[in-house]
Amino acid sequence: MAQFALIRRIAYTSDMIPRVLQVRITEQLQTGGKIVIIYGARQVGKTTLVRRVLDDLPYRSLAINADELRYNEILSSRDLRQLRGLTEGYELLFIDEAQRIPEIGINLKLLIDHLPHLRIVVTGSSSLDLASKVQEPLTGRAWVHQLHPIALRELARLHNRFELDELLEERLIFGSYPEIFAMSGAASRREYLQGLTASYLYRDILEIGGVRHSQKLRNLVRLLAFQIGSEVSLTELGSQLQMSKETVASYMDLLEQSFVIFRLSGFSRNLRKEVSKQNKVYFWDLGVRNTVIDNLKPLDARDDLGALWENFVVAERMKNLSYRRASASLFFWRTYTGAEIDIVEERDGELHAYECKWSKPRNRAPDSFLTAYPDATFEVITRENYHAYLVD
Image (cartoon, rainbow, N blue to C red; front, side, top):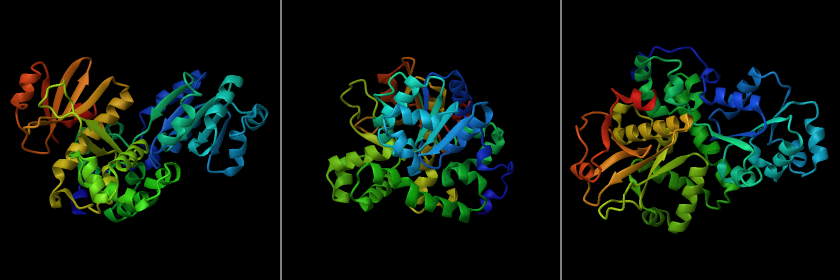
Protein backbone atom coordinates (compact mmCIF):
# COMPACT_ATOMS: atom_id res chain seq x y z
CA MET A 1 0.00 0.00 0.00
CA ALA A 2 1.68 3.14 -1.26
CA GLN A 3 0.54 5.44 1.52
CA PHE A 4 2.76 3.56 4.00
CA ALA A 5 5.88 3.55 1.82
CA LEU A 6 7.28 6.87 3.08
CA ILE A 7 7.34 5.89 6.76
CA ARG A 8 10.87 5.80 8.10
CA ARG A 9 10.97 2.66 10.19
CA ILE A 10 13.04 1.78 13.19
CA ALA A 11 14.03 -1.86 12.77
CA TYR A 12 12.51 -3.71 15.67
CA THR A 13 10.65 -6.89 16.38
CA SER A 14 7.55 -7.08 18.52
CA ASP A 15 9.46 -8.13 21.64
CA MET A 16 11.66 -5.02 21.48
CA ILE A 17 8.84 -2.54 22.07
CA PRO A 18 9.23 -1.18 25.63
CA ARG A 19 6.21 -1.86 27.84
CA VAL A 20 5.21 0.66 30.46
CA LEU A 21 4.42 -2.01 33.05
CA GLN A 22 7.85 -3.65 32.97
CA VAL A 23 9.53 -1.40 35.54
CA ARG A 24 6.57 -1.50 37.93
CA ILE A 25 6.23 -5.29 37.80
CA THR A 26 9.99 -5.72 38.26
CA GLU A 27 9.89 -3.55 41.38
CA GLN A 28 6.91 -5.41 42.80
CA LEU A 29 8.54 -8.80 42.34
CA GLN A 30 11.70 -7.50 43.99
CA THR A 31 9.60 -6.27 46.92
CA GLY A 32 7.76 -9.58 47.22
CA GLY A 33 5.04 -10.38 49.70
CA LYS A 34 2.23 -10.24 47.12
CA ILE A 35 1.30 -12.03 43.92
CA VAL A 36 1.51 -10.08 40.66
CA ILE A 37 -1.48 -10.70 38.39
CA ILE A 38 -1.47 -9.52 34.77
CA TYR A 39 -4.68 -9.57 32.74
CA GLY A 40 -4.90 -8.96 29.01
CA ALA A 41 -6.26 -10.36 25.77
CA ARG A 42 -4.40 -13.18 24.08
CA GLN A 43 -1.50 -12.02 21.91
CA VAL A 44 -1.06 -8.63 23.62
CA GLY A 45 2.36 -9.67 24.93
CA LYS A 46 1.81 -10.85 28.51
CA THR A 47 4.21 -13.79 28.24
CA THR A 48 6.85 -11.68 26.49
CA LEU A 49 6.56 -9.00 29.17
CA VAL A 50 6.97 -11.45 32.03
CA ARG A 51 9.94 -13.17 30.39
CA ARG A 52 11.62 -9.78 29.98
CA VAL A 53 11.07 -9.11 33.67
CA LEU A 54 12.47 -12.52 34.62
CA ASP A 55 15.54 -11.92 32.46
CA ASP A 56 16.28 -8.78 34.49
CA LEU A 57 15.91 -10.47 37.88
CA PRO A 58 18.47 -12.71 39.62
CA TYR A 59 15.95 -15.27 40.88
CA ARG A 60 15.87 -18.92 39.83
CA SER A 61 12.50 -19.11 38.09
CA LEU A 62 10.01 -21.84 37.27
CA ALA A 63 7.79 -20.97 34.28
CA ILE A 64 4.60 -23.01 33.88
CA ASN A 65 2.12 -22.88 31.02
CA ALA A 66 -1.27 -23.79 32.45
CA ASP A 67 -2.22 -25.44 29.17
CA GLU A 68 0.18 -28.25 30.13
CA LEU A 69 -1.92 -30.82 31.98
CA ARG A 70 1.00 -32.23 34.00
CA TYR A 71 0.96 -29.13 36.22
CA ASN A 72 -2.80 -28.76 36.60
CA GLU A 73 -3.27 -31.55 39.12
CA ILE A 74 -0.65 -30.19 41.50
CA LEU A 75 -1.64 -26.53 41.13
CA SER A 76 -5.29 -27.36 41.83
CA SER A 77 -4.62 -29.92 44.59
CA ARG A 78 -4.93 -27.79 47.74
CA ASP A 79 -2.06 -30.00 48.94
CA LEU A 80 0.75 -27.90 50.42
CA ARG A 81 3.12 -30.85 50.29
CA GLN A 82 2.70 -31.19 46.53
CA LEU A 83 2.96 -27.44 46.03
CA ARG A 84 6.18 -27.37 48.03
CA GLY A 85 7.59 -30.21 45.97
CA LEU A 86 6.78 -28.45 42.69
CA THR A 87 8.42 -25.16 43.68
CA GLU A 88 11.31 -26.51 45.75
CA GLY A 89 14.60 -24.86 44.81
CA TYR A 90 12.93 -21.97 42.99
CA GLU A 91 12.68 -18.36 44.06
CA LEU A 92 10.08 -17.22 41.52
CA LEU A 93 7.04 -18.97 40.04
CA PHE A 94 5.46 -17.82 36.76
CA ILE A 95 2.10 -19.33 35.75
CA ASP A 96 0.94 -18.39 32.25
CA GLU A 97 -2.82 -18.51 31.43
CA ALA A 98 -3.63 -19.33 35.05
CA GLN A 99 -7.39 -19.22 34.47
CA ARG A 100 -7.14 -22.76 33.07
CA ILE A 101 -6.23 -24.22 36.46
CA PRO A 102 -9.16 -25.22 38.70
CA GLU A 103 -8.97 -23.89 42.26
CA ILE A 104 -6.05 -21.66 41.30
CA GLY A 105 -7.04 -18.95 43.79
CA ILE A 106 -6.94 -21.06 46.95
CA ASN A 107 -3.71 -22.74 45.82
CA LEU A 108 -2.03 -19.40 45.21
CA LYS A 109 -3.15 -18.36 48.69
CA LEU A 110 -1.52 -21.49 50.13
CA LEU A 111 1.72 -20.68 48.31
CA ILE A 112 1.89 -17.03 49.35
CA ASP A 113 0.91 -17.78 52.96
CA HIS A 114 3.23 -20.75 53.53
CA LEU A 115 6.13 -19.99 51.17
CA PRO A 116 6.68 -16.25 51.74
CA HIS A 117 10.11 -16.37 50.07
CA LEU A 118 8.52 -17.44 46.76
CA ARG A 119 7.76 -14.62 44.35
CA ILE A 120 4.77 -15.33 42.12
CA VAL A 121 3.49 -13.78 38.88
CA VAL A 122 0.48 -15.10 36.96
CA THR A 123 -1.22 -14.06 33.73
CA GLY A 124 -4.75 -14.50 32.49
CA SER A 125 -6.30 -13.75 29.10
CA SER A 126 -9.77 -13.39 30.56
CA SER A 127 -10.78 -11.62 33.73
CA LEU A 128 -14.19 -13.28 33.76
CA ASP A 129 -12.81 -16.59 35.03
CA LEU A 130 -9.46 -15.87 36.69
CA ALA A 131 -10.79 -12.91 38.67
CA SER A 132 -13.64 -14.97 40.06
CA LYS A 133 -11.16 -17.62 41.20
CA VAL A 134 -8.60 -15.33 42.83
CA GLN A 135 -10.52 -12.27 44.01
CA GLU A 136 -11.65 -13.59 47.39
CA PRO A 137 -8.69 -15.86 48.27
CA LEU A 138 -6.14 -13.18 47.31
CA THR A 139 -7.79 -10.13 48.84
CA GLY A 140 -4.93 -7.89 49.99
CA ARG A 141 -2.38 -10.36 48.62
CA ALA A 142 -2.06 -9.25 44.98
CA TRP A 143 -0.97 -6.44 42.70
CA VAL A 144 -3.23 -6.41 39.63
CA HIS A 145 -2.41 -4.99 36.20
CA GLN A 146 -4.04 -4.93 32.77
CA LEU A 147 -1.83 -5.14 29.69
CA HIS A 148 -3.25 -3.56 26.54
CA PRO A 149 -2.25 -3.63 22.89
CA ILE A 150 0.76 -1.38 22.33
CA ALA A 151 0.03 2.14 23.57
CA LEU A 152 1.12 5.37 21.91
CA ARG A 153 3.12 6.29 24.99
CA GLU A 154 5.08 3.04 24.52
CA LEU A 155 5.73 3.81 20.85
CA ALA A 156 6.86 7.28 21.89
CA ARG A 157 9.92 5.67 23.46
CA LEU A 158 11.00 4.53 19.98
CA HIS A 159 9.64 7.28 17.75
CA ASN A 160 9.62 11.06 17.76
CA ARG A 161 6.44 13.04 17.10
CA PHE A 162 6.96 13.22 13.36
CA GLU A 163 7.32 9.45 13.19
CA LEU A 164 4.28 8.89 15.39
CA ASP A 165 2.28 11.04 12.98
CA GLU A 166 3.56 9.00 10.05
CA LEU A 167 2.52 5.78 11.79
CA LEU A 168 -0.93 7.07 12.68
CA GLU A 169 -2.72 5.66 9.63
CA GLU A 170 -1.30 2.20 10.33
CA ARG A 171 -2.65 2.30 13.87
CA LEU A 172 -6.11 3.32 12.70
CA ILE A 173 -6.24 0.50 10.15
CA PHE A 174 -4.15 -2.39 11.48
CA GLY A 175 -4.28 -1.66 15.20
CA SER A 176 -1.54 -2.18 17.74
CA TYR A 177 -1.15 -5.86 18.60
CA PRO A 178 2.59 -6.45 19.13
CA GLU A 179 3.06 -8.88 16.23
CA ILE A 180 1.74 -6.28 13.78
CA PHE A 181 4.87 -4.19 14.29
CA ALA A 182 7.15 -6.99 13.13
CA MET A 183 5.27 -7.30 9.83
CA SER A 184 5.62 -5.35 6.62
CA GLY A 185 2.92 -5.11 4.01
CA ALA A 186 -0.84 -5.23 4.23
CA ALA A 187 -1.15 -8.88 3.18
CA SER A 188 0.78 -10.33 6.13
CA ARG A 189 -1.02 -8.06 8.58
CA ARG A 190 -4.39 -8.99 7.16
CA GLU A 191 -3.56 -12.69 7.45
CA TYR A 192 -2.43 -12.27 11.07
CA LEU A 193 -5.53 -10.32 12.07
CA GLN A 194 -7.84 -12.79 10.35
CA GLY A 195 -6.24 -15.63 12.30
CA LEU A 196 -6.48 -13.64 15.53
CA THR A 197 -10.15 -12.79 15.14
CA ALA A 198 -11.05 -16.29 13.95
CA SER A 199 -9.53 -18.12 16.91
CA TYR A 200 -7.95 -16.33 19.86
CA LEU A 201 -10.51 -13.53 20.03
CA TYR A 202 -13.35 -15.84 21.05
CA ARG A 203 -11.47 -18.75 22.60
CA ASP A 204 -11.87 -17.90 26.27
CA ILE A 205 -15.40 -16.57 25.86
CA LEU A 206 -16.57 -19.77 24.21
CA GLU A 207 -14.69 -22.10 26.55
CA ILE A 208 -15.12 -20.32 29.86
CA GLY A 209 -18.16 -18.13 29.36
CA GLY A 210 -20.47 -21.01 28.52
CA VAL A 211 -21.60 -19.43 25.26
CA ARG A 212 -23.71 -21.91 23.30
CA HIS A 213 -24.35 -19.89 20.15
CA SER A 214 -20.91 -19.02 18.83
CA GLN A 215 -22.21 -17.63 15.55
CA LYS A 216 -24.53 -15.24 17.35
CA LEU A 217 -21.60 -14.05 19.42
CA ARG A 218 -19.64 -13.37 16.24
CA ASN A 219 -22.62 -11.60 14.71
CA LEU A 220 -22.92 -9.44 17.82
CA VAL A 221 -19.27 -8.45 17.58
CA ARG A 222 -19.79 -7.50 13.94
CA LEU A 223 -22.83 -5.36 14.76
CA LEU A 224 -20.91 -3.62 17.55
CA ALA A 225 -17.99 -3.01 15.18
CA PHE A 226 -20.30 -1.07 12.88
CA GLN A 227 -21.53 1.03 15.82
CA ILE A 228 -18.28 2.21 17.43
CA GLY A 229 -18.75 5.64 18.92
CA SER A 230 -22.54 5.29 18.79
CA GLU A 231 -25.00 4.55 21.54
CA VAL A 232 -26.12 0.94 21.46
CA SER A 233 -29.55 -0.40 22.25
CA LEU A 234 -29.71 -3.86 23.75
CA THR A 235 -33.29 -4.19 22.55
CA GLU A 236 -32.36 -3.35 18.95
CA LEU A 237 -29.34 -5.66 19.00
CA GLY A 238 -31.46 -8.45 20.39
CA SER A 239 -34.06 -7.94 17.69
CA GLN A 240 -31.44 -8.10 14.94
CA LEU A 241 -29.84 -11.21 16.43
CA GLN A 242 -33.09 -12.87 17.52
CA MET A 243 -31.87 -12.92 21.12
CA SER A 244 -33.24 -11.48 24.33
CA LYS A 245 -31.73 -8.22 25.48
CA GLU A 246 -30.63 -10.06 28.65
CA THR A 247 -28.59 -12.50 26.54
CA VAL A 248 -27.12 -9.62 24.55
CA ALA A 249 -26.13 -7.90 27.80
CA SER A 250 -24.52 -11.13 29.03
CA TYR A 251 -22.52 -11.56 25.82
CA MET A 252 -21.38 -7.95 25.94
CA ASP A 253 -20.19 -8.45 29.52
CA LEU A 254 -18.15 -11.44 28.35
CA LEU A 255 -16.65 -9.44 25.48
CA GLU A 256 -15.71 -6.66 27.88
CA GLN A 257 -14.17 -9.02 30.42
CA SER A 258 -12.18 -10.69 27.64
CA PHE A 259 -10.77 -7.30 26.59
CA VAL A 260 -12.39 -7.14 23.16
CA ILE A 261 -14.59 -4.10 23.81
CA PHE A 262 -15.20 -1.52 26.51
CA ARG A 263 -18.08 0.85 27.18
CA LEU A 264 -18.57 4.47 28.17
CA SER A 265 -21.74 5.54 29.92
CA GLY A 266 -23.48 8.87 29.55
CA PHE A 267 -22.49 11.68 31.89
CA SER A 268 -25.23 13.41 33.81
CA ARG A 269 -25.68 15.43 36.96
CA ASN A 270 -29.31 14.34 37.02
CA LEU A 271 -30.47 16.93 34.54
CA ARG A 272 -33.64 15.65 32.87
CA LYS A 273 -32.47 16.55 29.36
CA GLU A 274 -29.23 14.51 29.58
CA VAL A 275 -28.90 10.95 28.27
CA SER A 276 -27.46 8.72 31.01
CA LYS A 277 -28.87 5.21 30.59
CA GLN A 278 -27.26 4.33 27.26
CA ASN A 279 -23.70 3.19 26.60
CA LYS A 280 -21.26 3.76 23.77
CA VAL A 281 -19.11 0.80 22.71
CA TYR A 282 -15.47 0.93 21.59
CA PHE A 283 -12.89 -1.69 20.64
CA TRP A 284 -9.57 -1.95 22.43
CA ASP A 285 -7.91 -2.57 19.06
CA LEU A 286 -8.93 -1.10 15.72
CA GLY A 287 -7.17 -3.82 13.75
CA VAL A 288 -9.53 -6.32 15.35
CA ARG A 289 -12.51 -4.06 14.72
CA ASN A 290 -11.65 -3.48 11.06
CA THR A 291 -11.03 -7.17 10.45
CA VAL A 292 -14.37 -8.12 12.00
CA ILE A 293 -16.14 -5.96 9.38
CA ASP A 294 -13.63 -6.99 6.67
CA ASN A 295 -12.49 -3.44 5.98
CA LEU A 296 -8.74 -2.79 6.00
CA LYS A 297 -8.91 -0.13 3.31
CA PRO A 298 -6.70 2.99 3.55
CA LEU A 299 -8.15 6.07 5.19
CA ASP A 300 -8.80 7.94 1.97
CA ALA A 301 -11.11 5.12 0.83
CA ARG A 302 -13.21 4.88 4.01
CA ASP A 303 -16.47 6.43 5.14
CA ASP A 304 -15.90 5.72 8.86
CA LEU A 305 -12.84 7.88 9.50
CA GLY A 306 -14.59 9.98 12.14
CA ALA A 307 -15.63 6.88 14.09
CA LEU A 308 -12.13 5.37 13.77
CA TRP A 309 -10.53 8.54 15.13
CA GLU A 310 -12.95 8.75 18.05
CA ASN A 311 -12.37 5.08 18.95
CA PHE A 312 -8.61 5.56 18.67
CA VAL A 313 -8.55 8.64 20.93
CA VAL A 314 -10.82 7.10 23.58
CA ALA A 315 -8.92 3.78 23.66
CA GLU A 316 -5.49 5.43 23.82
CA ARG A 317 -6.67 7.73 26.60
CA MET A 318 -7.98 4.72 28.54
CA LYS A 319 -4.60 2.99 28.14
CA ASN A 320 -2.76 6.13 29.25
CA LEU A 321 -4.89 6.55 32.37
CA SER A 322 -4.62 2.83 33.18
CA TYR A 323 -0.84 2.79 33.01
CA ARG A 324 -0.53 6.02 34.99
CA ARG A 325 -2.93 4.67 37.64
CA ALA A 326 -4.69 8.00 37.25
CA SER A 327 -7.88 8.63 39.17
CA ALA A 328 -10.15 9.69 36.32
CA SER A 329 -13.40 8.54 34.74
CA LEU A 330 -14.48 8.86 31.11
CA PHE A 331 -18.03 9.40 29.86
CA PHE A 332 -19.77 10.74 26.80
CA TRP A 333 -22.36 13.52 26.99
CA ARG A 334 -25.54 14.02 25.00
CA THR A 335 -28.89 15.70 25.44
CA TYR A 336 -32.20 14.46 24.11
CA THR A 337 -32.24 17.50 21.84
CA GLY A 338 -29.09 16.32 20.06
CA ALA A 339 -26.21 18.32 21.59
CA GLU A 340 -23.25 16.03 22.29
CA ILE A 341 -19.60 15.79 23.32
CA ASP A 342 -17.42 12.74 22.67
CA ILE A 343 -15.54 12.63 25.97
CA VAL A 344 -16.23 14.10 29.39
CA GLU A 345 -13.36 13.30 31.74
CA GLU A 346 -13.89 13.75 35.44
CA ARG A 347 -10.70 13.98 37.47
CA ASP A 348 -9.93 15.58 40.81
CA GLY A 349 -13.50 16.85 41.00
CA GLU A 350 -13.18 18.83 37.76
CA LEU A 351 -14.74 18.27 34.33
CA HIS A 352 -12.77 18.32 31.09
CA ALA A 353 -14.64 17.97 27.80
CA TYR A 354 -13.06 16.77 24.55
CA GLU A 355 -14.30 16.50 21.01
CA CYS A 356 -12.53 14.09 18.63
CA LYS A 357 -12.18 15.53 15.13
CA TRP A 358 -9.88 14.27 12.39
CA SER A 359 -10.44 17.58 10.61
CA LYS A 360 -12.64 20.69 10.69
CA PRO A 361 -12.79 21.11 14.48
CA ARG A 362 -15.39 23.31 16.09
CA ASN A 363 -14.19 26.04 18.39
CA ARG A 364 -16.43 25.64 21.43
CA ALA A 365 -18.58 23.23 23.35
CA PRO A 366 -22.35 23.26 22.87
CA ASP A 367 -24.04 26.14 24.64
CA SER A 368 -26.21 23.75 26.65
CA PHE A 369 -23.08 22.06 28.07
CA LEU A 370 -21.42 25.39 28.90
CA THR A 371 -24.59 26.54 30.64
CA ALA A 372 -24.87 23.36 32.69
CA TYR A 373 -21.15 23.12 33.49
CA PRO A 374 -19.60 26.60 33.23
CA ASP A 375 -16.38 25.59 34.99
CA ALA A 376 -15.58 22.74 32.61
CA THR A 377 -12.73 23.03 30.14
CA PHE A 378 -13.16 22.17 26.46
CA GLU A 379 -10.63 21.04 23.84
CA VAL A 380 -10.75 19.47 20.40
CA ILE A 381 -8.39 16.50 19.87
CA THR A 382 -7.14 16.42 16.28
CA ARG A 383 -4.34 14.69 14.40
CA GLU A 384 -2.30 17.87 14.95
CA ASN A 385 -2.51 18.05 18.75
CA TYR A 386 -3.25 14.53 20.05
CA HIS A 387 0.21 14.01 21.57
CA ALA A 388 -0.46 15.98 24.75
CA TYR A 389 -3.67 14.10 25.56
CA LEU A 390 -2.60 10.60 24.55
CA VAL A 391 1.19 10.44 25.02
CA ASP A 392 2.61 13.10 27.34
